[in-house]
Length: 197
Image (cartoon, rainbow, N blue to C red):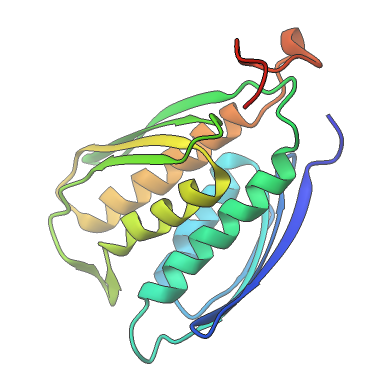
């Protein structure tokens, strides 16, 4: 596979975001967003997904964090879709279970070419600091819609909302790492009986 690096800039009246992703990186992360807890979660994606991520964002957080978090998910999805290329030789599917103390989450991901998100997470609190945990879904909905992936997210247990959200992001990073990896037995082959994804 060629270098799988992409930079996408997305500007709206609500946010201005630039994302650079290297799917074959080492986990190097550089974030400048107005949502500190999201920065911490994005770091989990980079570190556990072994992707290099640079995300620069400003947004209308004087209203709330919703637009900025969702739009970062959208822009990351666009960048991953561009970086993934034609999908020939791709492993395509990835899954991960990740624990953190009492919490555990599972993420299953498919570079199917069809966007879809099923998410089951009963967070024990509405906020982690100032971060509204409902925005976790908004981030991943934006991602799947623009990365064109099918993804199932299940927080299987947890008694601490920070841990619940963090296990989701860590499991996402690990699942992305597997799904986006090259399968040497599929070199040059589209991983689909349809011949296209």
